[in-house]
Picture (cartoon, one colour):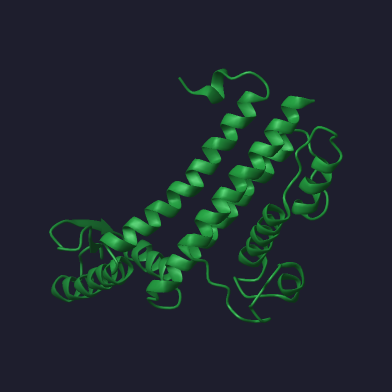
Length: 226
């Protein structure tokens, strides 16, 4: 039974949050496991598409009247193929590899998406609790908890981690992951300089996940105590 469908008000929103948090963290585990099991995946996929296009060129020379379909291998061993139209195959290559094959770029971008999803899970939960999201999100949460006499509030370390998550998410969405002056000004103990790319490690993603969970539980407990 899915508790998101049968839960009572208050609990239903919590279960929705848990599902969103789970999806984000599972994506991180998927990225990590996939990188371990198949570290050259994007390079091989790039080769598979190019191989299909090259094969189509050869087939076109042999049979100028054929439909120009492109045989793209479906696995690394080239044992199975999937036929695409040339237009679809060329568009696929353009969409997946606009700047050639850069293995590390995709992993870093993937972790950036996890950061966005983690932040979104917490912000959506706060909004579902009726907290107006106006202004910087960490301050919204902090001010809300401080306004509740029975609220436990945020420790300084938790608040600093929430600020770091909020600013990292802002870089991913608005600045292609490059450090901005805003990031330098707002993130405690920052060591990055303006213009530098801010990489996102697995450890940082998991720490962000713990922070989101901790803040959500505080919000939940505060709402229950009202």
